[in-house]
Amino acid sequence: MATDFAVLLHRFLTSHLAGLRSCSPNTIASYRDTFKLLIAWFRDCRAIPPDKLTLERINADAITAFLDWLETERHNSISTRTQRLAAVSSFFRWLQSQDPTRMASCQDILAVPAKRQAQPSVNHLTIEQTRRLLAQPDRSTRRGRRDATLLATLYDTAARVQEFADLTVRDIRPQPPALAVLTGKGRKTRHVPLGDNTAALLNAYLTEHGLDKPGHDDYPLFTNQHRNKLSRGGIAWIIGKYQASAGDPALAGADLSPHVLRHSKAMHLYEAGVPLPYIRDILGHVDLTTTEIYARASTEAKRKALEATYTEIVTDELPEWNHDTALLTWLGLCAVIDPQNHCHQALPASAAHNPALFIRGCCFPGPVQYLPAQVGRVRRDSADPGLHPGQTSGSQPAVSGGGVRNCASPPPR
Image (cartoon, rainbow, N blue to C red; front, side):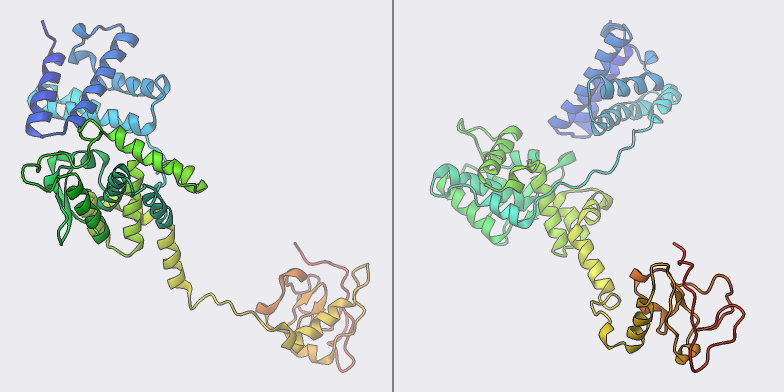
């Protein structure tokens, strides 16, 4: 006889996800794989066979131990761990509405926290790298023209790889205004505009392959040699082939995938000044905060913002030291210092009218902001802060002949 867990899990996967929520086959497969791993963990780590696994045995402690096992024993990443937790949480969130008597235990499991991780940087190509990649296919051959159209359309639509693989002839309108209709998560559709160059490539491609004729609307847009639609792995393989042939060390060393082209398009749109809400709609994001990763990651946008902010504050003009006679006089005074750090140069009488600023015991006659950093820190006389320029302890302020300043005490560091 089936356990309560088996019965409810079957209803969740077949009726709830596939029926009510209209989840894609890939989403359902991801949820299914999560529970396959959970059942295997109970069998191997808790010695509970699948036919004995009941809801009573599944609690918050067990889920936490399962997640730790994924990370330590199966070497899954933190993002994969979080994805598995999301699938488990979705099941127990649904279970609350099906059986309110289990709400307390369900909420304990829903309270299991996701493991935090550093926000990864957005991996993307520069515009020049993207242009070089898209130029790699040999357009003198039928296969090369197919691949050139594929790469241009994948970049221009910023589609998720499964959205792109699912494209049919019906989903493309190459006539102005050209657009592609993408079906994303939750079976939601969105219209993405296409550039003129991409539309021209698609028009030629449809004509060459006879896909512009009536009766071909439901044909896959891009197919393999067996006339079946390209898989996600096949699309990634095509990208990798042209990445290797590009001859660009930076491009060859990049972690390139279909999703990186999606990131690249989004980043290029943002750096071109396209508002984030428009980028969100093109990418098919539900929440604008998801799209904001491109605003945080765009170094070029940050640089432009900083330049616009500080243009009038930070200047590239430097002081003309050779025209500053007061500074030159002071530098000449400070040059007359013997190895014992004693200054034997008499200060001029005019120094008595300047602030009592001493560097290595010499009077600096100019404004504080022009003190060069190389000569040490500015200080007043540490022994007697009330001394005037040219005055030593126990003496009167300097007059027309100037005075001698003892420089034995170096400035504080």
